[in-house]
Image (cartoon, rainbow, N blue to C red; front, side, top):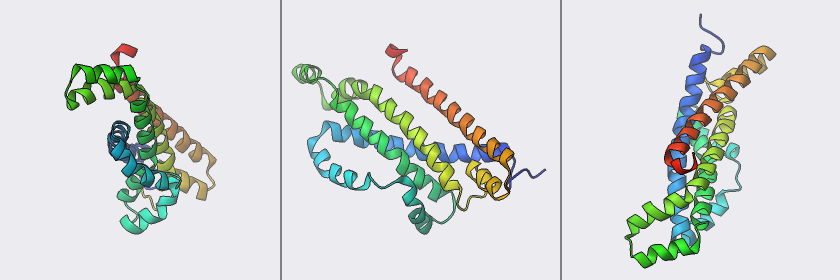
Length: 205
């Protein structure tokens, strides 16, 4: 059997999870890096922050037409939109995490004369980790929300494609199947992220 909406349910789920994972990993990695650099270096903040504040108010869904024009209707456009949605929470929370580190900790590290690499590894990143993971959870949520909207346009496979096809067919049962599949997929990825958080911060387990 071909399934519904050009594929079987597991194919739609795998397609959506692949897109979310790709966009989330790229955006969160770059977002965390930028947030840490902005929080730790006033010059980087002065250069990047005005650009970031200018682009930040643009809703992720507003990038869909531009992504289609630039990258077509394929997966790349959807990953780009997910990237935009997940990038902002990762930057903001990483930046806030670094800035939330207490001054005595910074002064103690400076007094001990540790290298810059050790300062980032032993002080900044561990101190910022709680808020970094808060940003990652928000980024993952934004990734799924944006993916479903992005897949409503020009997607052959994916849970958003199921929802779009079911709406056109006036098929409430299939709409519920798509919604439940999104919920379960998002929950599974959230549990994986929670395990990563426990591994990265065993002292909070």
